[in-house]
Amino acid sequence: METGLTLLIVIVNYKTPDLTINCLKSLSNQIVKIKNSHVVVVDNNSQDGSPEKINQIIKENNWQWVTVLAESKNWGFSGGNNRG
Image 1 (cartoon, rainbow, N blue to C red):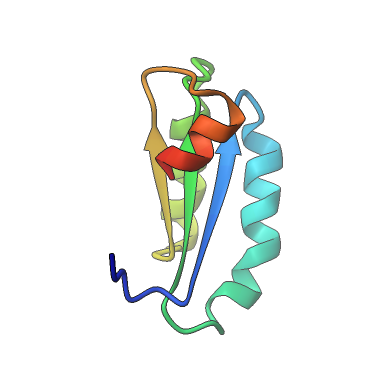
Image 2: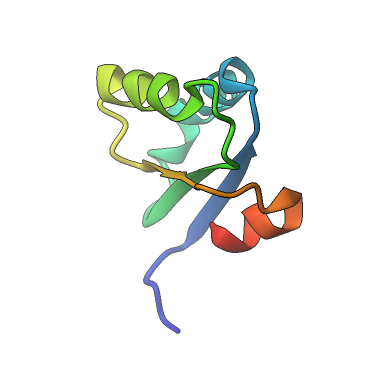
């Protein structure tokens, strides 16, 4: 399967939106320098407003290089990575 991506980063979130946002902030200056790169945040059914909080920061910063997948089931760490 050819995606055209040079780098794909998968971050699994479960009830830690602030840590995930800090991770995205730390990536923000570097990720734009890597051609064809993208970050996927998989929220493992946190049920604490994590996806909304993370999406709000993404929107405020116009981070087009990141996508949030809000799952309706907790897949565990490895399953979350596979979803990403």
